[in-house]
Length: 127
Length: 206
Image 1 (cartoon, one colour):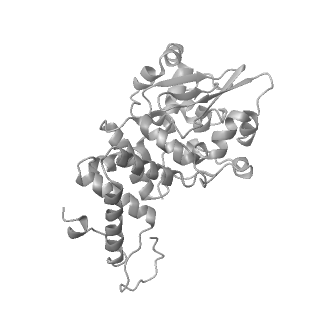
Image 2 (cartoon, one colour):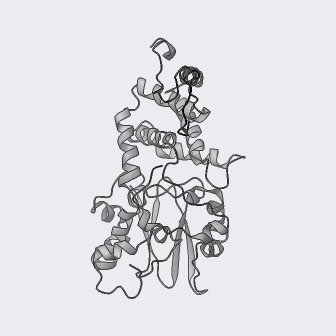
Image 3 (tube, chains in turn red, green):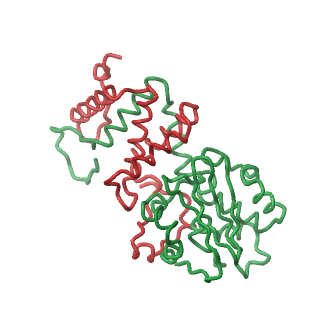
């Protein structure tokens, strides 16, 4: 979906594919990847954590068993690292996240296809 | 969820994947608590999708090929020399530029995660983030280079540099023969992203 101003710089190399290194993908393969990326960068820019703290967690996640060899699930690990860091920093607790995730799930299921999904105030835990 | 263009009955709701739900949960909580500003997130996404990419690095390389003084500065204090062209930002604070020569070929990896010089190269390609490259570029650099179509003479020493959250590397590839008298713009056009990671060579094709 999203491309980058790098078309002329990237010559797809069939040899790379043939020998098992993964193919190119767009910068972000889905909007959620972009959102997960931006949240981490923004929190770091605001000085809410050191990049090293995030890199350490990301590295742990990437080294964990079950990581895709082709890097395809990279941003899933990024997201998990960010969830862990925001919990460790006390920004968002795990139960709070779980509750909010359930609220989004309910909101999605109650929203007809093609319409924007919004959280009701009540679903936000009365905030 | 993807739409296939067919008519959907509106008697059932939408479905978000678990990952999408997690992202929405995290983002909505961070926004409500004032940790992030949604507008700033949009700007970041736009920036990294559209504005920051290896063309920045290509201009740095072309200028270094063209101007000996700039090249000396770049190799001495890469962060400052790069910032002078306006390429600043996250993950580019402590840059080191490595010069490729007939004797030494440099290539860059991040074995732990995917540290990468965003301001000059944009976000890393998938293969850079993938386990095979991260593991094998250290243990078998020549074979990895061969997979990228790069074969170097046995007399060329290969140095593999492991990026960290503190230090980011960019390779200054060799200027190809047959480019005398080219403008900086022409030179920048032939510099590939991979050549600045060290997994490619620059060829004089315009």
